[in-house]
Amino acid sequence: MLTLLFPLGAHAAKSIMVFGDSLSAGYGLAIDKSWVHLLQKELKRTQSGYNVVNASISGETTAGGKQRIAKALKQFKPKVVIVELGANDGLRGTPIKNMEANLDYIIRKSLEAGAKVLLLGMKLPPNYGEPYITQFADVYPRLANRHHILLLPFLLEGVRPDQFQADNLHPVAEAQQHIMLNVMQELKHLLH
Image 1 (cartoon, rainbow, N blue to C red):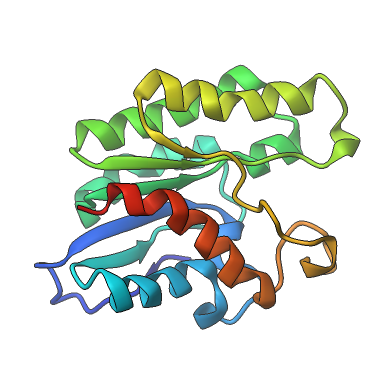
Image 2: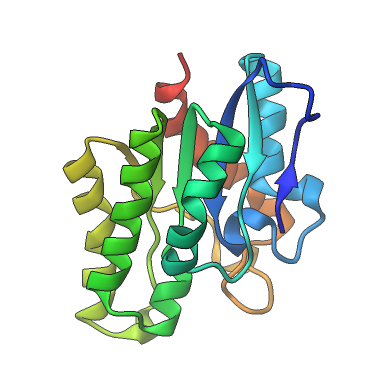
């Protein structure tokens, strides 16, 4: 689901494109409760020059993102791209090298389009076993270093175990403000 959080006439505003999966699409939540919507409200309050475009799709993988990134960049012409992908690759046991190559492509295309990039890291549940969990987690800092981009090491840092929906994967509405503030901690460095 693609959600525009600003009127189409608002071309003068600088846009931030959130390019992610269900964690950013607001899976299981009312749209106005999602961290992306809360981010728009926060930016409206503090940085009137920015609008948020949510180009996130529930169930999206890095391979799907690789297929969509060029069109999304052309359509929205973002000044900043927040990349939040990889969780579904991890849950499916996608080979790490494939996931990394797809994220690398998405980041490269975003930078080539003139956007600044914020990469949101993820961690897998412990039942996925070592060494896959470690290899998965290592992809994010490696890509951030390679491309000299900002990294939020773990999107869900500080979300309590009781703040997840029944699937134990998607945070409830009460956790979304905390997630938005996690993102804002890094994003603020890109808002000039």
